[in-house]
Amino acid sequence: MSNTTLALSIILVPCIVFGSIIWLLPWKKTNFQKDVEEDLRVGEAMNVLKISHSDGYILKRKQAEEAEKLLRTKLAWLPRNFTVPNIFLQSDKQSVFMQEGKKDNRTLVFVHHPRAAGGHVINCLNNLSYTKNMAMSPVMNSKTRLLWDAGNPDTVTFQNRIGIHRGGYAFGVCEKLQRNCHYFTMFRDPFDTMVSLYQHCLDIGTHEYCSLLKSKFVSLRDWIIENSGLLLNQFLYSSHICLAHRIDSSTETLKYPCWHRQKMENDRLTDKEKENVANYIARNLRRWFSVIGVFEKCDESMAMFEHALGETFSKCSSNRNVRSFQEETMMTNKAHLLSNEDRLSEDDDSEEYEDDIDMLRDDFYVQRALSPSNTIYAEAKRVFNIQRQILYNKLNNN
Image (cartoon, rainbow, N blue to C red; front, side, top):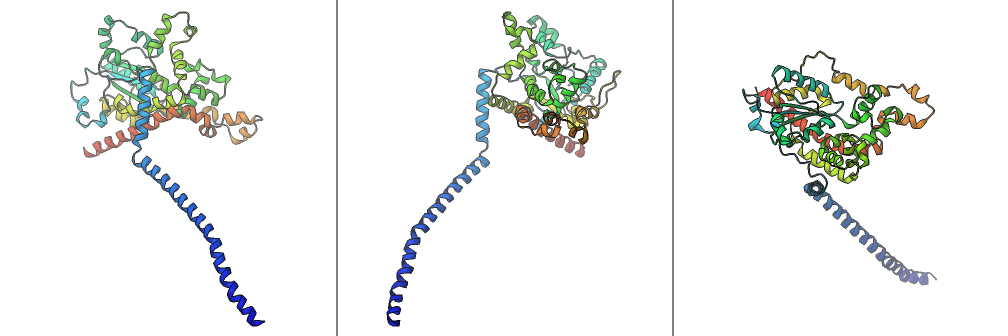
């Protein structure tokens, strides 16, 4: 029996071993094929990442093409031609406006974005107009801008004598004059701007957007989403829309002020179109504005204004009280300084959420609504940081 068992073992063991190998081969092959396919997919993904990393301009170029198409079809007036590019980024012109006699023939245009320390800048411009006898136009709100653009050729001579413009709708005033102007402005974080403007509407209510949607009747969240296009609307303003409505007196939109009609036109743009326009504006900030300031760095911004424009902006005397940018920052969260106990005592969870600044800042719909403004603001901050570094380098080398 032992011999028989030994013989069977000699026969069966090789069969079992080779059988197992044969049985494992397809499985091994299958796994190998899966590994190869997975490697190929990973390789393709890496190639895409490499392309997007090294050739990211392709996406930007596509966005630029889409924006150019949109400008030709819907926003043909947006490109601005009569501007002086950023002073800090032009080494050959960096100090030309500091030279004697060079400042007399220029036109200063301050584009006033709300709740961004613009009151201080306007006060400085008022002093400049008085002390240096520079003619200044009325504040450029939507009504004033409509009258300015509607002027006939006989008024151009008078308009050319004006050396200072300021206001929320001042961007583009020099297109009518067909002369280069020094545009400058102060930007602020779009979310903080909306919160501050909401509180302003609750307290005073003098801004035009306060009349569009009464802040005391709606939550902060709804107010932000409805008015999120404020920054974009200031850039896209065009009087021809209101003039066209004026010709057709039967239109229902005549009952709305010009800025509101402009807002309704811009609200018809899709989210993608708004983002394309915002990218176009961001790309042209350096070409359109001689100098850019940001509210969060107000003192440094005033120093940059002084260096680029050769006028005093850091200290301006005034007979009226102008709220400092520090006080304005404190007002931003004035209506939302509730304690945790106060918040927990609220019965309505939705009201508690809509009053929570941090939660609102991260709210999906709020972020989506403010996305175009954030695109512009991000580029404005980038340009500001470049200006600051150039100015510091210049001051340290002197």
